[in-house]
Amino acid sequence: MAIAPDKTVLVVGGGISGITAALETAEAGTKAVIVERNPYLGGRVAQLYRYFPKLCPPYCGLELNFRRIKENPAISFYTLAEVEDISGSAGAFKARVKQKARYVNEKCTACGACVDACPVERPNEFNFGMDTTKAIYLPHDLSFPMRYVIDASVCKGKECGKCVEACKYGAIDLEMKDRTFEVEAGAVVYATGWNPYDATKMENLSFGNVKNVITNMMMERLSAPNGPTQGKILRPSDGKEVQNIAFVQCAGSRDENHLNYCSAICCMASMKQASYIREKHPDSKVTIFYIDLRAPGKYEDFYRKIESDENITFVKGKVAKIEEDSGSGDVVVTVEDVANIKKIQEKFDMVVLAAGMEPQAKTVSLPGGVKTEDNGFILSDALPSGVFATGVATRPLDVNTSNQDATSKAIKCLQILVGGK
Image (tube, rainbow, N blue to C red; front, side):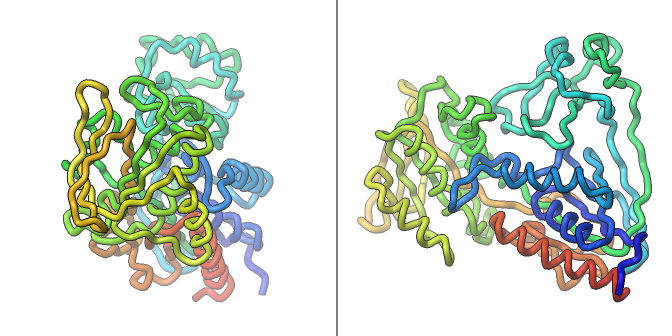
């Protein structure tokens, strides 16, 4: 049975899972609308330096998907937007969407003249505050859409107006307003993704107090060529090149006081990041402090490869305390060494916390009859007919599995649109 041309799938979230769900449904003959709260599509994947286990850059896959979106008139997307309410039932949903003003319209060519003129700086959240942008900024080098955005919380508006004067294309509209509109859809997919767990909550690990303690996602940005240090792994306190680094596993995960579940990918992520510094500095040394190592299925080979590196040491033990050496700025790690039944102290240039994955739905209320379990993951079995959840919105997943899951949910959407059930 052919799919009616007016049938639409609403995808809430424009990360890798949401993009995949939208593409798979639209390329099968229906329409797809993506609603994304950030000013760009790509989600957390856009912030990564490389995927595991092949260690290829995620921009390759993202750029291909962005091209597929641009070339497909059946897909529309709205950034800086959130779904405020969903009513109706399978085959006939109505969603109210609020979109914040971007203050930059489609005439933008991303020439950068506005940035040169802007006098106001702000922390760069894409790089987790490790550098700054101007009040008008491009979210990242390959941002999609490739269009600047103004942070209204710091912009001086018409009081300044220097960006307006600098833009010869008339792309900046400081009078642009927020808007609310409706989307009608036959099916809904929640692909709301995840946030890194707040590492400041783990007081003994000293994130925020010891300057050279960072999180795993910060490490991704430090390693990336378009990151705050252009790919050089430099410690925050003094810009020293890191030669001796430690990774602390289960930073917040598997802890009843924080996240009482395993975040699934942290072990693999730390091993991947260990390869970053080993590649950049052949004499560098890496220590990974772990409780249990998890490299399921095909990732076992990647673990064996990392383990065979004589400059990478795995220590089974729980980190009790992290402190700063006041003279050198080095990081002093106190560990309960389980294998040798003793407490040890070691000093490192920098320490990376493998912070867990917390679902976005833990902190953001989702409309449309969405229920979550105590940790914030969406309960798929409790969703109304025609509403689905995918990716890390449902459980911790890697990129490859997220794509597979999103494809399966796209098929379920198509079944709803065709069969009306």
